[in-house]
Length: 294
Image (cartoon, rainbow, N blue to C red; front, side, top):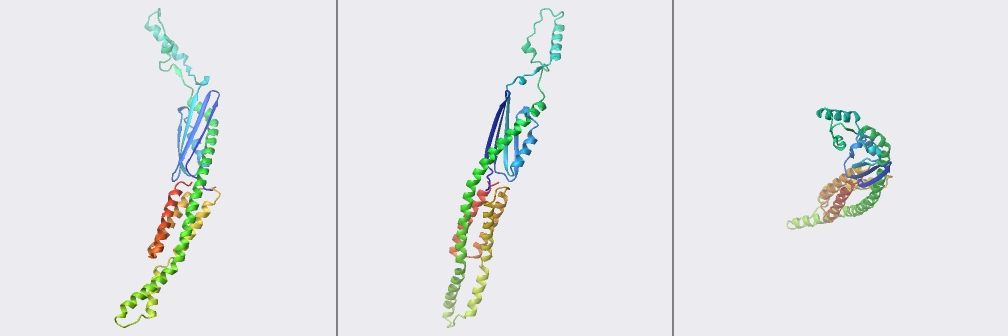
């Protein structure tokens, strides 16, 4: 079964006062592209996230947002005792013997270097297995949604293919009649022209002109090729979804349109022309829909 490129997935977890939340969205794209947005504390995990996504997804532009909040005791910054002591010593020296000096601790801790944060790399390393598990969970949810969207796409595309096949069968049935109608019209015109001179239409002359017309308007090869494209398209639709088929479907749709245009230009019959217009409209719908197939 084919898969869509549109989907959404989310997962979250809270552990020891730390909360992680992952959201991912995917939309149409010619190739696979990942845009990873990380909390500052998790900088460094981007490459691993992209690698995990590329193993599960073949096409689509995926935006991943990883949020992080820490309400644990580890979230507190460490006091740089040496730096604070030096500030106090400097303040005492400004007051001479230090008598009457009042130090506001809150203000003191706002001075540069008074507090030290935990190393970002340490936090990212500790969070890596949790984020990896959430990415896998969110990806699975998004892939499931893409598969459900793919089922709807499958039914729509299969309907268009069946309609094209039905209309093409009508064209194939009409094609031999076109030559017969041309022969009748040509005989009538030639007889009308030669009537005044008292001459009659020679069968060999008529057959020669009909043969030339039949050769120029022969669309059997184009019908066979278009039918073959429809068969291959149907095989891709009924595949197991193990590999991306969207680009192949897009190419086939382009080739279908090429064959339909050739049929329309070679066979100038009004009825055939009407049906080819219908076929081209259906192929355009195929082209639109396959843009969302992975």
